[in-house]
Image (cartoon, rainbow, N blue to C red; front, side, top):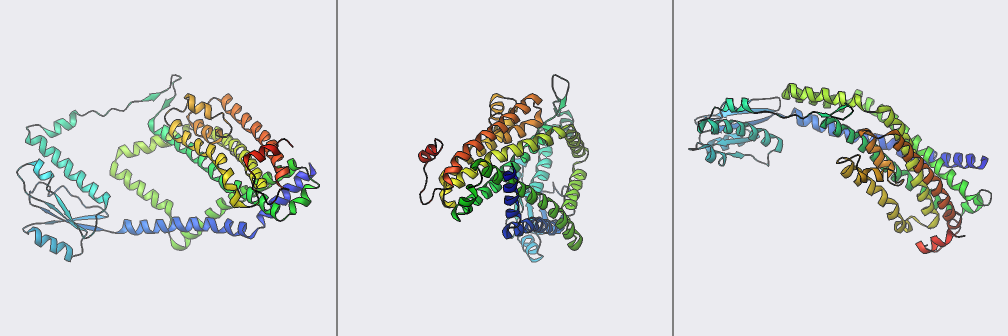
Length: 436
């Protein structure tokens, strides 16, 4: 056991003292903060831009329908021809010209409206304009047919179905979306962690094998301990880097906010407030519902199971990455063995997003949440929807039992593969190694 602790210490110190590791630990969060700050700055410039649109309404039906806001101003033109209006709009450098001709019917008018601009206009701006025209046109169309548009609007009924379990627990469509988001983020983090640090373990084994250092080490340490030590040591280095990223992201974000006055979170809050004011009580109600749904999430259960599945899933795949590293002489030779490892991960993501969202407690979702190679992703996405504790515990036990078996399996490949040079191994040859 003493050898194991020494190997873990050696692997950990080798990783954290590596120049590229140190550079990427500091550079990655700086790049991320820089990108987010740049996007926030560009969004701020875009939000501060005021677009002026001239409106030439020959029909006289929409004169008072277009209202100014912080980013959009409407300039109503009268007693002017279309060609003169186009020249004046272009000469004044305005965003565009909305031309509404005079027609005998609303149907004919709807097909004759034109927006003139120098470049292709914003889809958001055109959407707002079309909604305004559509709303007024529908009202006019009803009145033209002899109906009272206001009465018809008052007679409309909005259906909002309440969701509740047989046990009396209230749910909602918004709550289901939030649960899927939480599960999706957890599964995605695990997926990325496995890809990044699994490759780190594989490269580490290949480097030691090609430098012949492994021949000295394996003479005094059993392959099982050596493999386990490399996995745990690299895992600790990964956790250290991840923790450093979180701290540095917070520090860099605070520094950029203080120096340049760019605060992405504040801008998002401002945009949310604007949306609430524009939508009135309906948007405010949705926000309150989202807060209540968040409070109803099994946060403690999510955190505990996230840690267990995160650790178990990573260790399981890390042992396979280490076995591949031992079997080959260079990183280019690993491609033929990577697909069987990546396929279960990709399958887990697809099952999680396309099956769990449709039926989180269905047969497919349940089966894949117990298969150890897919359970870390699928079960994490199912837990927010309410999974019995016994199922979670059984899934975790199967995952860690499979990890132990995989380490034993990988160690048999490892003890032979680390001493093999100059030959690209095949699947058939690797199976032979298991019998030695």
